[in-house]
Amino acid sequence: MNIVTEHTEEITQVKVPLPFPLRWVNAYLIRGDNGYTVMDPGLHTPDAEALWLQVLQERGIGFEHVEQIVLTHHHPDHYGMAGWFQERTGAPVLLSETGYAQVQLLWGAEQPMSALLLKLFARHGFPQDGLDEMTKHMVSFVEMVSPQPQVTLLREGPVRLGNRVYEAIETPGHAAGHLVFYDGEAQVMFCGDHVLPQISPNVSFLPQVEENPLGAYLSSLQEIGRLPVKMAYPGHREPWPLFSARAAELVRHHHERLALMEDQLSASLSAYDVCRATFGDRLSIHQMRFALSETIAHLILLEAEGRIRQDDPTAEYIRYITVSK
Ligand SMILES: [Zn+2]
Ligand SMILES: [Zn+2]
Image 1 (cartoon, rainbow, N blue to C red):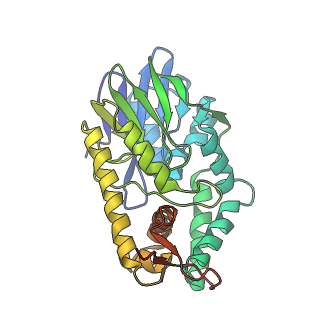
Image 2 (image 1 turned 180 degrees about the vertical axis):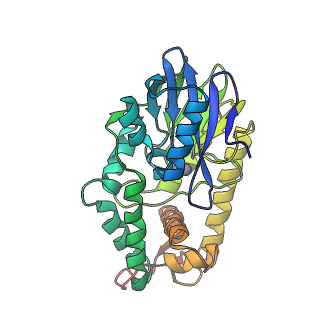
Image 3 (image 1 turned 45 degrees about the horizontal axis):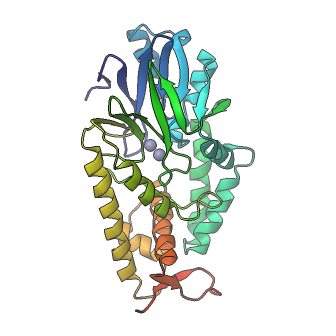
């Protein structure tokens, strides 16, 4: 496997290692007359640090040649190294306003998201004895996103990456405030984790963030799926040309999963029950966190569409059941 791939004279992909089954995140070095843009530099681990030092040295790129650090979204596997780069380069770190708000919820003072998420999971039937492990899991990320950068807010609209002007387009769903960067003339898109080849991007419900994240995901997928794209550069796996086809496939995948969950709910079940029926019983705590948030996102959409309802709102935890037609 190539760690570094030069796709064009301007665009170089760097696979930054991750200690998860995903294995790596794609960072991109985008070369321009004013220096390099580093997109999504990765999760901060000793291995990622070592890789960056080696890649920069081999390519003769000094820290002073880094013009800016641009983030598609705030997830730790993309954001984690941003502060490390900023410390060494003094370059601005660009992130959307909604993404920055979540950085503060997740890893700001007292990390309010941990408590909110645990409360949500308990309401949806996640067993009490698993909550401690889930807390430890959440806290373990703080180190991997430190030091945290000073963030410059990035809005939708034109943004220069290297020598070309891209359109930053907000594509919520996988992450609120997620941005893709589209060059309509070259028909090139940096799509972050919004659309991935082979993998279905996680769509999580998070408290205080987005009321119906799957609804937002499906509409933004349909919207950007219409754009002509000859090459898409994703956050994971390899760049690929058939962007629109993949976007349409992901829309189908979620509609199938919604139908499946609706069927399961002919019996009254909690989101945790539906999660285990859908994703299996043998998930790690990391996988469980995303599987359960994803299940809740699907159930919220089904409820919004009037296909399921809460069975007994006074019960200790929420159970859902299909609305009989
Ligand atoms: Zn992500
Ligand atoms: Zn990612």
